[in-house]
Amino acid sequence: MKTCRDVMTKDPLCCLASETVNRAAQYMKESDAGSVPIVDSPQTKRLLGIVTDRDLALKVVAESRDPRSVRIEEVMTRNPVTCQENDDLQAAIEAMARNQVRRIPVVDNSGHLVGIISQADIATRGDSARQTAEVVEEISKPEKMSTGMH
Image 1: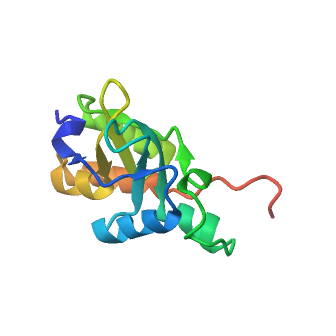
Image 2: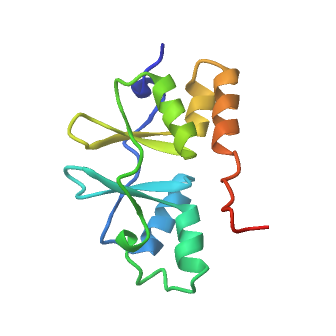
Image 3: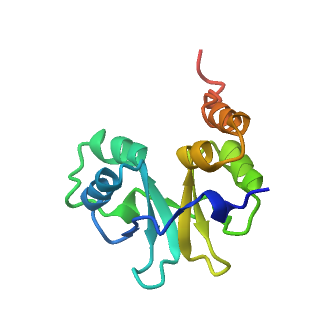
């Protein structure tokens, strides 16, 4: 069985919570990524949250906010779903599916960012095409609609 360490992208680009969302968007463009992990400092890299391209679209662009002045901490998801380096890859895949997330930060025992696993990492480094298909299917299920809608 593969571990999270076997498939993760090591040392992903990350941002500080105090930086602007414009900087996060630049990092996403530079690294061709849909998310950026948010850490406390460049030295310790203790994971604080994650910001996604969807966060930027819905919480900044759609609300006509200025990306050069909005701080990442205002729009990031705090305490994101994570896995640890030595966790079985299947456990990480199940956590991604259960929480409908397309990427999962990998942390060490102290909560410091060491990597990230995306759907693409699973597709290219995972054990099987079936595994990849399961992840995409579970993550892509539509969210449950509230009962007030007709």
